[in-house]
Image (cartoon, rainbow, N blue to C red; front, side, top):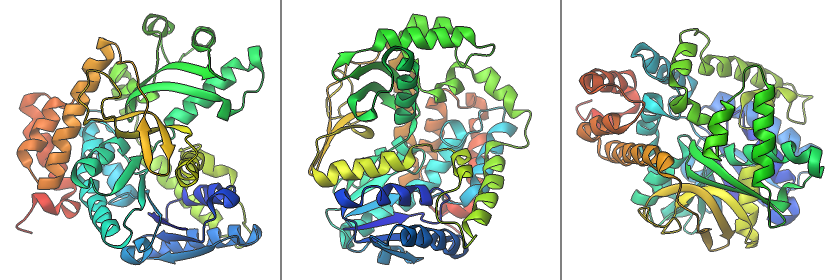
Length: 431
C-alpha cells in the first residue's frame, strides 16, 4: 500500500519511519511519500529517512515531494502532521496569549484557537483532494489541536474516513504500568487497556485493566503514594483522592491556571522557542550522512510514542485486527446522554471498515461541565474557521474557560486575526 505523510519535513518523521520499518510484515507498505511545502527541510529529513531505509534493507520505496496532489493520489492512508505558519506561528500564538494575560499554548485557549483557524481550511482541502484521488483512504490526523481538527473533518468532510490520534493516552498507560511494576513486574502493553474519556487534551483516566482484571485501585494508590513522596508533586494528592480519576496533564491549564500564567512571565524561552532550538540541532544531526537511526535527542522534542500510536492504529485498521485504541472520533451514542455527534477521545475498536467507539460511562458532573464549555468553543471555532465568521469567533472566545473577559474579546480577536492575517484569508476577503 501507499502511505502519504503531509508535513513530511517534520522532525517527528524519522520516528514515524521507524514505526513503519518495525511493522513491514504486517503492513506491506509499498511506498511511503513525504510531502512538505518546505523543500529544504524535506531534503534533510527525506535524506535521513532514505538512509534509515537502506540500513534496513530498503523494504519499501520512499518518495519526497512538494506536490500535495501527487502525494495523496492513490494512497491508502494519509497522515497529517502539519503546522500552518511553521514554528514562527506557534511562537506568535504563545506570546499572543501572554500579552493579553491569558494562557499562551499551542493547543488550548487563544493559541489553540488561532492554530485551529489557520489549520482547518488546509485540512479540509486535503480531505477534498483525498475524495478525488484517494477514495476510501483513511486520514489519520496528528495535527494539533487534534480533536478540534477531527471535529471539523467529521462535520465538513463526512465522506472522507478520518480519525484523530494523540500520544497522551499511551504515555499515561506506560506510566501506569510502570507504577505497577513493584507489585506485578513488567506488563506488556498489549495486555493492558486504559479507560479514558473526554476531549483531546481535556480528558480524564478512570480505569486500567490487565488481562480483563480491574487494577484501578492499585494504580490510584501507587499514584497518590508517589505524589505524596515528591517535594513538588504534579497534582495535589487530595485532588486525586477526591476525584478517583487521573487528569490528562493538559488540565493543568485549567486547574492550575495562576501557576501556568506565572510560568509564562519567565519567558523567553517559550516552549516554541525551546523547540525551535531543538529542531535546529535535530536537523543538523539528520544532515549527517553517517546517521542511520533516530538520535536520542529526538525524545526531547516531545511526542513520545507517536510512531507507536500512528503505525499501530494503521496496522489494526489494515489487518482488521479489532484491537482497541484511544482515538478521536464521533462517539455516536457510546456515552449515554451526551450529544451523539460530538467528537470525543475514547477507546475504540479498530477494524478494516470500522472505528467503533466502545460504550463508556459518562464523566462526573464536575468534569462534564468543563468539557461541555470547551466543546461549545470547539463548535464555534469550526464554524468560524470554515466560514470566516467573526461573530462565531467572538462566541468561541466567550465560551472558552481560558478566554478573555467579555470586554476584552474584541481586542483579542483583532490581535489573533491581525497576527496571522497571511494564513487567515477567509477572514480578509478584500486581500
